Amino acid sequence: MTDPHEPMLERRALRIEQNSHTPLYLFALAADEVGLVADVARISRDEAGKLIGYQRGERRNHVKQILDYLNSGEVVFPNGLILALPDTVRFRSSRGPATTDGLATAGTLEIPLPTNDSDPRPAWIVDGQQRSLALARTSNSKLAVPVAGFVASSLELQRDQFLRVNTVAPLPSNLVTELLPEVVSAPSPRLSQRKMPSALVDVLNRDPESPFFGLIKRASTDPDERRVAVVTDNSLVEAIKESLESPSGVLFPFRNIATGSTDTDGIRRILLVYWKAVRATFPDAWGRPATESRLMGGVGIRAMSRLMDRVMVHVDLSDAGAEKAARQEIMLIADHCCWTSGVWEELGLPWDEVQNVPKHIAAISNYLARVYVGARKERK
Image 1: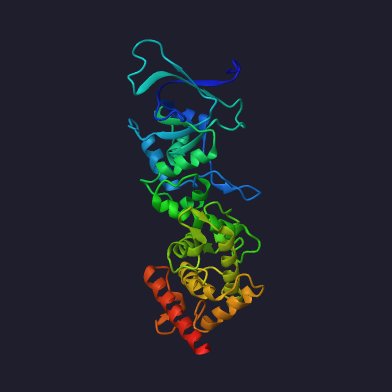
Image 2: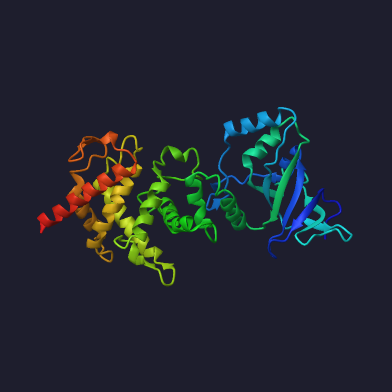
C-alpha cells in the first residue's frame, strides 16, 4: 500500500498496454518538476569495476541552444523525455465509459517523490538528457513537458531501451560499444556482432595479466585514467570482431555457430599470448599515445591484429613457451616496422603520416603479411 505520508506527485496520464510486462504512461511535467522526478544515469564503473549507468556527459553547446530557445518567449516544445519509472508508481483508471478506447486508458499516475534533496530521484532519464539539463535551468519553469514513461525496475531493461531509442540519432560509438555486453539482446544484428568483441575488450582492459590493462579508453573511463588510456576501444573491438567472423581468422574456430556458444577462455589465451609478445617485441612503442606511437593507434592495432591471424596458427598455446614462440614469429617483421620513427619501406609513408583510415590500415596490414610470409619461407 502507498504510505499516506509519502510525498507524491499526481499527474493525469494515459496508460498504453503495448505488452503485459512493461506498462507505458504518457503524461506531462512542468519544467521545474523534471529534476525533482528524474536523474541522469552517468556511465562509469564502481570500485569493483562493474559498469553502472549508461548516459554520456553533458554537451554544453547543445544544452545552451535548447536553453536559449526555452527562454525566448512563446515556445513549442514537442520533443519530450523518456523516463524509466520505478515499480512503486501507481496508476488509477478514471471512471466512466469513456475511460478507454481500446488503445489507451485515461487515469491518474502517482509518482513517489524523494523526502529531501539528498535522496535519489525515483526515475531515470533514458532519452532527453540534454533537454532535461536545459529544462532544469530555464526561466520558463512552468512549461509543460511531454513525457513517456515505462516501468523498468532493472538497469538492464533501461540500458536496452536507451540503445533502442537512440538508434536514429547515433550515440558515440564507444558508448554503444561499452554498453552492448550489458544488455540481453542487441537492438540490431550489426550491434549484436559487436557484443562479444566488446566484452573481450573489457576483459583485456581489466585483467592485470593483460598487456592492455588500464590502457584502453572506454566511455566510462575516469578523466584521471584517460591520461594513460592510449588505445581506443573501437579499434580493438573491430580487430577482434574481424578475426571472430572471418573463416581465416585465428579466433573463428572458437565460435560454435550451430550452438551459438563461444570459447571465451581460449580466445582470452590467444589474445594475451599474442599481445604480450607484441609488447615485448616493441617495448619502446608500447603504452605511448598514438601521436607518439602508431602501434597504439587504430592503424597499428588493426594491422597487428591481422598479423595475429597468421602468427598464432604456428604457436602451440598448450606449451609453456607459447609467448616466447609468438615473439619469435613477430620478430620476423620487427625490423620492418616504423611505429615511432622512420619511413615504411615500399609504401613511402613516414611513420607520423600513417593514419587510422582504411587505405593505410590495408596497406600496412598487407605489407606486414608479405614480409612475414617471405621471412618464414627464408627461415625454412
